[in-house]
Length: 317
Length: 281
Image (cartoon, rainbow over all chains, first blue to last red; front, side, top):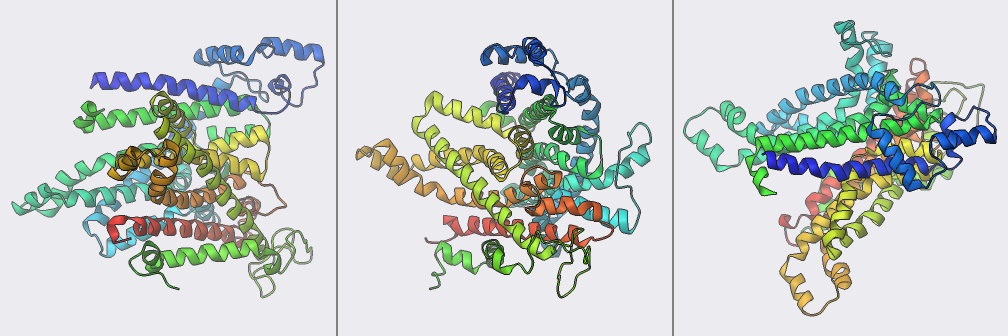
C-alpha cells in the first residue's frame, strides 16, 4: 500500500509542474505589455516607472528564467498582487476558498444523498416503474444546464413562492440555519448534473454485480433480498461510483464560477469572473492554479481510496 | 431506402430515442441554416411600443426589454449553438485523434510524454479554461470554440489510444504487419477505421457538452457578445427581468435542454447500435 502511495505521489510531481507551466503560458499568451497588466489598466505610468515594474517582476529576463522565478514564488505561497484591490492574491483566494468549498461540499453531498439511493432502487427494480422514473429524470437532468435549473429555482421558490432567499451568503458558523437556507438552491443547481451521472453509474454498476454468481448463491441460501443488495452487492459496485464522484469534484468547482455569479455568493468562482472583467490577471492566474491543483489532489485521493477498497489495484500496476 | 434491420444504421433508426434525437437536431440545424427566412423580425429591430409584451400571435414568445422578438432571437441563437458544438468537437477530434494514434504508433517515451500532458490538461475544467482564455484573448466565437475544443482533446486522445491499443493486438493487424504494411498505413487503414465507433459516440456526447458550456459562458458574459444572440447571453440579459418576463428566461433554457438531450440520446443510441455484440454488421 505504501509503496503504491509513494509511487503515485511521485507521479504527481511532473503533473504539477506541467500545470504550472500551462498556467504560466496562459498568462503569457495575453497580447499587450505585461508590465502594464501587472499594475492594472487604469494606472498611468511613464516608461521609467514601467521599467521599475519590469525589473521588480523580472519581466526583462528570458521567459524560462521568468518561469523559474515565478515558480519559486508560487511554491513559497506568493501568487502576486491583485491589480484592482492591491491585496495579495493568496489572501484574496483564502478569504473565498472556504465559501466555494462549503458550497461545493454541500452540492456534492446533496447529489450523493439523492443519487446513490436512487441508483440502488433503480437497479433493484430494473425495468419497473421506479427504474423508469429515475432513469428518465437522470437522462433529463444531464441535459439541463445547472445554472438554468438555478434560475428556475429562483423563479419558483424566490419570486413566486418567496420561501427561500435567492441572493447572498451566510457563514455556517454565524447562523447555521440561515446559512443552509441560503445554500440550498445554489447547491441543487450546482449538484444536479453530478447527481444524475452518479445515479446512472450506481445503477449500471449494481446491475452488473447483481448478475454475479455469488449474489445468486447468497439469495439461494435463503438471505432476503435487501440484506444481499446492501450487504454484498452495493459494496462491490461502489468502485466505479467513487471514480465518478471524484471526477465530479472538478465539474462542481467549474460550475461554481456560474452558480456563484447567479446567486451572488462571494466565492472563488465569482471572484474569478469579476477579475476577468476587471482585467485582473493575477487573480485569474491564481484561481486557475488553485482549482487545478485541488482537482489533481482529489484525483490522487480517489486513487488512494480505490487502493484501500480494492486490494488488487495495489499489486496490479 | 431504409437500411436493413440488422445493420448499425438500421438499429439506430429503429430506436425511438434516436429518432427523437435526430429529429430535434435536424430541426435546430434547419433553424440555424434557414434563420434568415424563418425569423419574422430582425433580431436587432427594437420596437419601443411593444416592450416586454406577453406571448401573442405576432410574438409567440413575447418580446424583451428592447421590444425585440424573442422567438426570432431564439432562432438566430441556434446558429452559435450549432457552430460551437461542431467547431469544438471538430477541433477536439483534429488534435486528439492524431495525438492518440501517435502515442500508440511511436510508443516509448513519446507515448509517456503525450499521455502525461493529457493528464495535466484534464485537470483544468473546460469552463474554467474558457473563462481564463476569454480573459487572455478577448470575447469571440473563436475563443469559445478554442476553449471547449482544447478541453475535448485529452478525452479523445485517451480514447483513441486505448482503442488503437486494443485493435492493434488483434490477429489481422499482426497479419498485415507481417505482410510488410508500413506503420502509418497500418494505423490509418487497419487500426483507425476499426477504432471509430467509440470515437463517434464520444464526439456526439461532446457536442451536447459544448452546448452546455457555451450557455454557461454566455450567461456570465464571456464569449459571443450581444447584440448577436446566443442562448447563453439571452439568459444573462433575461435574468434581471425574471419577475416581470419569466418567458425570456424559460425559452432559451428549454432550447438548450432539447438540443443537449437530442445529442445525448443519439450518442447513447449510437453506442448501442455500434456495439458489435448487438448483432451482425
